[in-house]
Image (cartoon, rainbow, N blue to C red; front, side, top):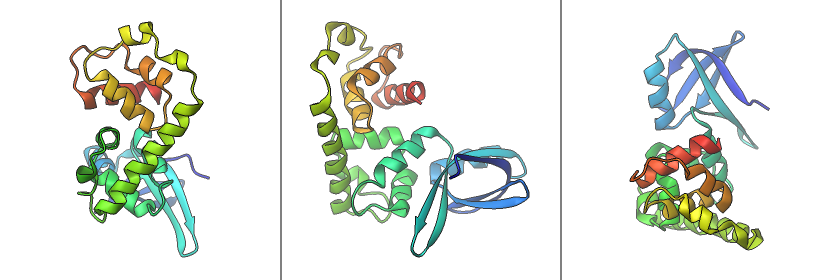
Length: 201
């Protein structure tokens, strides 16, 4: 229903922001990462947030995201059974999309379970279901994507791990390989993922 909201940042709370647009003040729940970005802009200034509208029996809630990467990961997380919008926001408040991708691809349940309200069982389910999505995609992909040319374009030892992490986030191997091409040689894993996500989005 809403793609984004752009207007004056009127109020910045602990886990929400109010943006006034067209005479209407929209209250959006935000992650700590988005809140930090908005704090740098400052109240009284123009801000723009991508949105996700959650409609449930007990109410309607609007969630705001500073980057497309965060919105995409949020939408991916809420497809996991038992993970609602509030839990997804807790995960994204604790870790960036890049860190979550690394944690899922490396099956780092401990890191994910450190997010407030996310226990070991929920963390394990996030890893399992997102990895299952990856396996389903892999089964439907052609085998011609992992070519010598693709491997030659890999900029560092971390690139294969980055490709795996990007595939967990729903991108094909071919898209992931093309996205990491051109990344600075010797870059860290999270830096490669961040570089690739900017290109993909």
